[in-house]
Length: 218
Image (cartoon, rainbow, N blue to C red; front, side, top):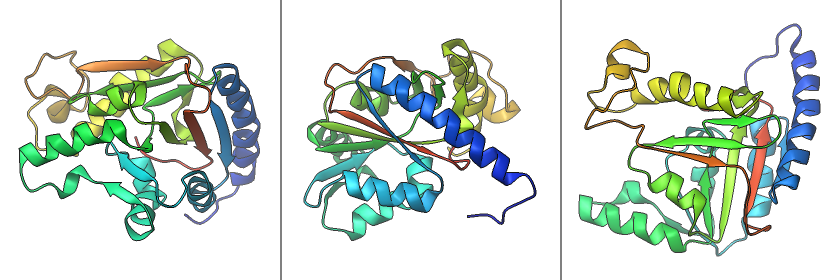
């Protein structure tokens, strides 16, 4: 956790109050929300939620990595399905398919609204498809920096902030990787193929969201 600056306590108070509003919105959408002031608190809550022995997988969430959740899963008593450990493209695809039968899928959101709607954009689309259907439980780790006012703002943030920043992580040829700005491209290597708007969960116990009072992910 970074050193505190003057005025940080006011951001902390704002985050707590705003998180309470979001959690009420999530509840109305059949999802359970929690607020963790720090990434250490978020890790503790995530470990409380995921029981030992559970099969666990994920879709490349920077936010979950930043709180140390992936390392905790790999070093703990869990059945980890890790596509990054695959030796071949075929094995990687097999692990991605196995993910749909996992007990827990760990992810984040590119944006979340003040009333609990989440937006995600994906290229390969294994992440958005697993959020929508498959794994028995989905655990979202979301920094308060991703909170926006409404769905239109969430889509805007996803396309024009999250996607161009994420593109810098990969060895791909897309306009946003070159310019830092979305070009609404149809590149063969686009990471913006399918957008998922999660406004409601059909199964009330399936999706849980940990809101973190720190900047996480993109």
